Structures are given as structure tokens and as C-alpha cells.
Length: 197
Image (cartoon, rainbow, N blue to C red):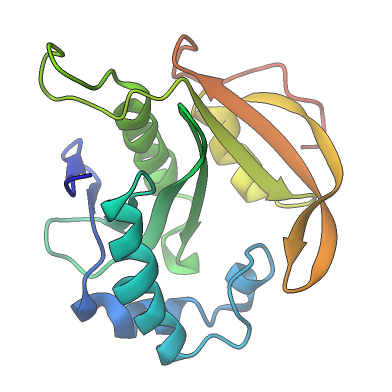
């Protein structure tokens, strides 16, 4: 897949580059990120190098793109959002945001842009800009990650349940929540999530 830059003129998404490595390493040392992700803890600069030079590059070469979240063009990144192909016509979304930039709607805006790109048709004869042509984007989060759930709820994901021991975090099985957004689902907030999530 050819790397794509996405923007709505409030948030800019582009593939992370080697110049982002030090910022990624610094932000990912925040305990609040390690608590809710499967990334290594402690997080080292070598982990950020492997992420940018390996995971990001191979993801764009396939169907698993990753974007840096920036508050302005060419600004230092403040977060990350990406898709991991899970089956034909579907992918799982993941994201994190620096604690100093939370509560401003940046990640909700970024997730909306990524979902629009993912669920937009692709292929010959499709009006530009073409998307990935997915039918489903899936969200999962460890039980208790209410901030991530709030983003998913605001961006059109329908809650589908709790998977017991449904995800692995650094060798430990944990329960996780799951929600999905289909290409036919409207992008706005979803009101019927269970209370307390």
C-alpha cells in the first residue's frame, strides 16, 4: 500500500519516520500507555527504532498502515493510530496519545479519519481518493480502559461484548472489550453502550 497522509485541517496523520523515534521513546515511557497496551515495559529507544524501521515499514508494505498523530503539519507527533489486518476486508484499530494532549478530541478526530479511509471503497473505477475497501474495523481494549472506550463510542463503534482472556499483555491473558464499525455504520457517537464502559 502506498503511504497516505490524512488530514481534516485540525489533525494531521502521516507515517512515522526515523526523526520521530526519540519522541516515540519518550512518550511511550508514560506508565499510562504501558498499562493499556502490549508494548514493552520499560520502553527503550531500541523499541522505538524497531517499531518505526520494522513494524511501520512492513505494515505499509502490506495492509496494516500506521500513522503519527500531529497537531500541525510537520509538528512533533503526539500519538499514534494504526490498523492491523485481521482477516480479508477487516482490520483492528489501535491508538495511543500523549497524556499532555488528552481531552482535546485529537484522538477521536484521528480515529474518524482512519476509519473513513479504511472503510472507503478501493480499486479500479473508484472515485478519488480511494480507501482500503474494508467492510469492518474492530476495536479491542483491555477491560477498564475507559478512555479508549470513549473514543470508540464517539467514533461510531458498536459495543459487541467482553472476551474473557481475549487478549495477551506481555505474557498475561486479560479480559478485553470488543466493538466493531461496519462500512454501513454512520460515523457519529453511539448511545447504546453498556453503562460503566
